[in-house]
Length: 326
Image (cartoon, rainbow, N blue to C red; front, side, top):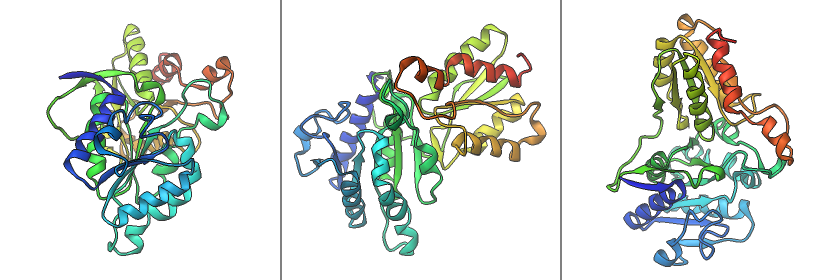
């Protein structure tokens, strides 16, 4: 097992798939000569050349559209957004083209494309650069949405995403690129649509994904000191959602709390809570609770930003609430 950073796991996944399949190429701002804004594509230009590692102008709607067209013609593009906040500029391409072409052509065209880059808040970047986009994209039929929190998951799921014949939104985290984890040296794939139990437990199910995973694990450690044994489930894939893993855990623990980076109104957390109450209502001993962003635009000031984020302490409060330990 190699101990590598998440950025290195992403780079290795792209490199292996580009070596395996000459149809795979990478395109985006600064992905080539600068080695990526967060160095996730370091060395790829040197190995594969400018034909397959394409630096673009600052025109997201343009290179997203070029990628969709290339996918329709048989290539397998990886489109990097320097931050998913910039994907808003290309939203029409993703919403009305990438997600719908297979359906609208009755399967005559498929769009095997991956849109990847950092999602959600980083640190003191202000309102327009601190948004979590998974709810936007998970809302759209025709897209698959993945959010990773470990090097192991990043590599295995990105390789699967590149090989998938559907458009995939692949969400990373600027704050977690340097986080290390063990990754097998041999090739492996992780099935899209399968959650992972990051911490087994018996008293409460804590559902999380992406940047919420370390927060949930820290909260579970705090809960353990108070005699609460929390099971932490990392969804990993937000669309399709692994209902079975969540419901099986809730049937065991009889309680559920959600910990995630994202606004509360109309988000993925609300969807998960609804599914838990629809599919496991008879097993619930308490209403589902959650710890997430405050329902406000982010401030630039560090103290105000911290107040908007789901901290381990806020997550612990949600866990204690469903366990009647408030």
